[in-house]
Length: 226
Image 1: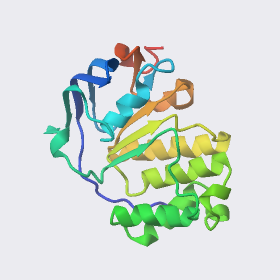
Image 2: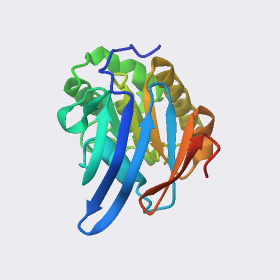
Image 3: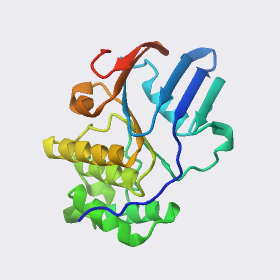
């Protein structure tokens, strides 16, 4: 069963110009210039503390830049408001532990104004039917990660932001993630993935950029930056 296809708002190209982010006096990002097009996957690499997670949180609207501009399809980020076409998965699954896997996805569907019937194909794709009625807190790390990924892709977002999405996944889970990302790219989604393991998703990536101490120090076609 294939998940139904929806038409979220177009959020690309995504453009960052001179973006800085400070935490008190400490710079987390410095002068970031980056452009991401539709139907492309960009890998964001770099050591711990380089600013990868901060960059994704800015793009998800969870943080604001201290300076510089972020634009989605030409619109300044501050004018975007709630963006149903933007999906973010951070280090934590952010599942409600006392809700079942199915209830977590149903809540996301309600918030995105999607029909409840849209859940079943995603439960199937991420092999979640066996745990669909289990509280998220009782799921293994891999099961919870698959549930969080299913929730992330629900509604076919046009901008997908993933922070270490392969964490906790077995080989089958990684394969499902790659297949799902490939389908999202074919639909025209822009995808940014922060990762310490670029090889796992490298074949899908059009570009790899590297952060170090909050600065963009390398960028180019996938495989061209390490």
